[in-house]
Structures are given as C-alpha cells and as structure tokens.
Length: 183
Image 1 (cartoon, one colour):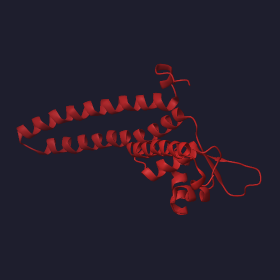
Image 2 (cartoon, one colour; image 1 turned 180 degrees about the horizontal axis):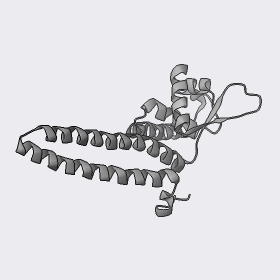
Image 3 (cartoon, helix red, strand yellow; image 1 turned 30 degrees about the horizontal axis):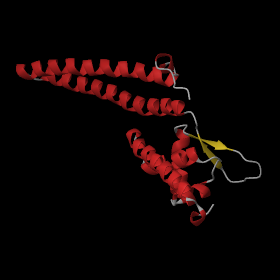
C-alpha cells in the first residue's frame, strides 16, 4: 500500500511501531550497539517476512554497506538469523524471536569480556604496586599499598562472583530463578 493510499489508522499504527523501534535502537546503546543496528533489528522484528539487504536499505534509507555491517553484528549476537525462501537468490534475514535467548547471548558476551579484563587489570595492578611496596622505604606508602591491595582483592572477588552470574545467564539457568514471562 502506498503512503497516499494509507488510512489515518495505518499511519497512526506505523508511527506507534516506529516509536517502539526507536526505543529499541536507543536501548541498544546499553550494549554498545549503534542505534542504526537497533533500527535494523526493529525493522526485521516487525516485518512479517524475511528481508534482503536491498529491502532493508530501502526501508531504512541506509547504505548497503551499513546494512551489511549491521546484519553481521546482529548475526554475531544471534539476534538475526539467515532465512530461506524458494526462488529467492539473495540472502534473506529474519529476526530471532526469542528475546530471552538474544539477551543471554548478548549479555554474556559483553559482560564476560569486560569482567575478564577487570580481573586481569586488578591482578596487574596488584603485582605492580606490590613491587613498588618492596622497593620503597616510605612506610605510609607501604600502608596505603597494603590497604589498596585489599580493595583490589575485594574487587577481584566481586568480578569472580560476576563471572559466576554471567555463567548462570549464559547457560539459561537464570530462568530457573526468574522464569520467562509467557504471553
């Protein structure tokens, strides 16, 4: 249906859906994902049929390169999957309908990366300031280093706990504690 043929109700419907897609795009920033990728996901999610990169480019008025990069990002996060339609030669994509699975994959991947880096950085910092403590004669500096090593060990304990939490999310065991909402 062309825009000039659409009823007022259809236009209001499309506006409401577009607002929700904008909210998805805005919230994707929480996961370090560009809003354009969020809009891409939203378009696929609300589309009844799988779409090609050309379909997506036309719908979102973005370059084919941006579409390709965005789809690749969504594929890596398991938020989009390839689709097949007989007689269609171009690659087709559709959204992953299970947001719970998408979240667990995305959350695990992002948080694991940062948490592992934090554990590693704390260990490097401890080693560095322990070495400094051995070299200095300044007792007040030694006391401060000792105190800060305790803080760093506390941080490491937190990050190790967080790693266990991430494993619970990634494994799906989280749903034993917080069940999925059924429609």
